[in-house]
Amino acid sequence: MTTPQEELLAGTRRALLRRIAVAQAEERAPSLVATVVRDGEAVWTGARTSLEGHAPDGDTQYRIGSLTKTFTAVLVLRLRDEGAIDLDEPLEKYLPGTGVGEATIAELLAHTGGLAAETPGPWWERTPGSLRPDLADVLGEHPLVHPVGRRFHYSNPGYALLGALVEKVRGASWEAVLRREVLEPLSLHRTGVRPQVPYADGWAVHPWADVVQREPAEDLGRMAPAGQLWSTTNDLARFAAFLAHGDERVLDIGSLREMRRPAAPAEAADVASGYAYGLGMEVRHRDGQALIGHTGSLPGFLACLVMSVEDDVAAVVLANCTSGPLLFPVAADLVRIVAEAEPRIPAPWRPLREADSAVLELVGQWYWGTLGFALRLSADGLVSLEPLSGKGRSSSFRSNGDGTWTGLEGYYAGELLKPVRRPDGSVSHLDLGSFVFSRRPYDEEAFVPGGVDPEGWRGVG
Image (cartoon, rainbow, N blue to C red; front, side, top):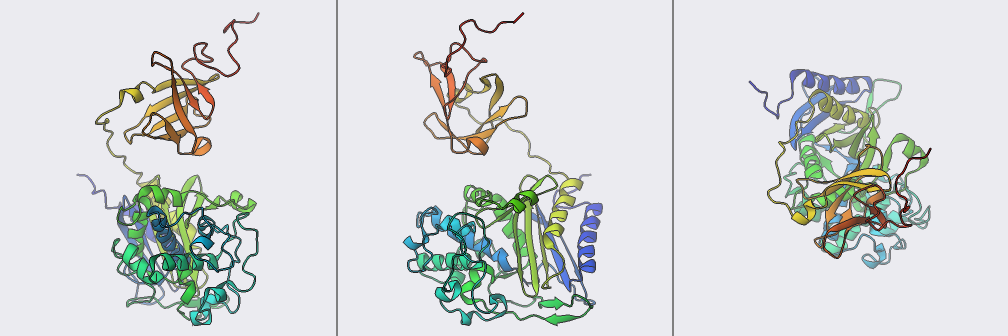
């Protein structure tokens, strides 16, 4: 007999339950619920609670705080993909009069717009949004604390501006646009700006005593695009599957890959800890594993969504306390437990349905100077250039449809790979951003900048 792919082994399920049980007990969370996603499907949900007989489940709403920012970023990328905005244009072009319009849309998405971390006045997370009815109230008299584009500085007001941008371009409220363009297509029916039964109450846990105090749950008004949403682990599991695989009704995989790439210069401490920020998504490295997602918090609530694209495993963890368990390590451990205990089974290899002879002519061994490389054609239609030693620069390349290819990763990202042909049509060499790759080391029949020693290869005695 074989185990259905969607079913986790008993030992894996026990390890997952133990991890969240330790987090809830040792960090004194009133409740904690988690869901694990594998291959785009929820495969496990577990919960722990301090209330006898009242454990939450995957359909219980919690507030997700800054995880809301990823939803807002998806809306902005949709506008870009439709041609309604350009991420490299300043905000002022689309939303004039803010006073901080020099920052580009991409800089606001990546928290490099130079804006302050918080709003002026009373703590916005614990006070009603009616205290900040206009963007000027969100930004204050001195909204910039750094030069635009110079450094990563997390900014909640920056995402309030992005929400206002969505409203201006769409001509509808951020909430209405989000529901129409993301929540409904992805069937996120338990995600919204206000709680719906069943939902968890938000609590503060006393730091020195096992007692609790209820936290307020305010409507954040203009700050809603930065942290307003309520959701469930079931809904966020579907959202995680979308972030991993894309959905043409909402956003294609190319734009999601763009969101997942680091887009902000990291501080030295962030480099050391393996943290970076993309376009509305956090990028982390932990124990050799690349993890993408976002964390969130509001008074009374903590949230985390994390996924390993390589393993196609994601985890969502929600808790109802102001501080307590650090949910990123918990979610990361849930991903690791599944990835290590039940490694991903790859899809069967299948040959290409058809192949261009001009491309097949290019594959094989090439040399840059004396370094050997292999150029391979894969089933997804990309070609990859990889050092034969396993050490050195490598990249995949996407066809431009005219015989040239554009690099997608690392040093060669954006660089042009161009086959150079002789008068008889045969390939002389590859030109990659002025680097010459020949079929033999310093091939005298290829154009090698600086020429080739006419005496050729020889021994020295």
